[in-house]
Image (cartoon, rainbow, N blue to C red; front, side, top):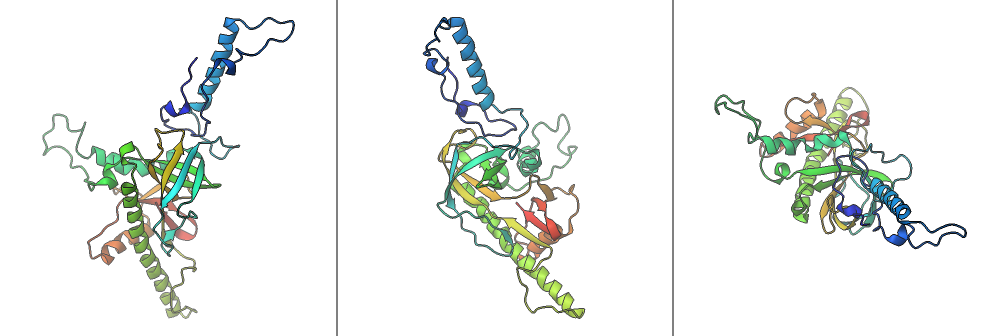
Length: 322
């Protein structure tokens, strides 16, 4: 009887990748080598086959998690056998960043991951970019009759599909971002994403300082006790960018998801859902993200622009961008 190891099971659409990889079923593992108790006959072929099929069913049920509800923190999560090492962490803390607590060369295990429907908006950009060339669309309509499609920028930011899951690492939750195609799980691609986060955090730092300074000025103008300079510890509405780190996969029991040697991104993000702030015009109007979007265009003299701003609105008007 042969049982496929967990690494050969296809990646699942939803569920918890937390099952221990089953060992190959052997005859002695299902009772063939066991001695029968005194007074009883040894098990026959049919009994052995029944035990073997039962063991096989149990192993497959524990490894294949497709179409199962996902519960990450209910009960003790099963081991995932995914080990990472931090190989890229170039961004320093600032007023515009939400930092992690990982250090360069840190090695740790991912306890469990969870595929959440609330994270699906993270993939919308890639889906729109893949369909903007009109595949499966126009029918017999002439190009002038077909509706004009919204154009997305080219390059890896939109063209390379990603998979996002919620990961439990060191007792805290984070986003694990993995390129769908194995050939794109490289340090070069991860560094491009980290550099984008660095640029956005730099703009967010300047934007938050401007908001705080404007608030202090208004307070002083109204007779309040305003200080001369903005302090990053002061409370108030602000935008913060979740800062990723680049991690290399040292070992993995699910190579379809992240094979050994692959480079992935680990992003601190406390929420289980992602909202679109700047996307295609259909999103709800949120004043602070809209102001941040226009601030970047103004500060860069029109040379740079943020797009697909997404994340979550936190307490006291804080927006986390991922």
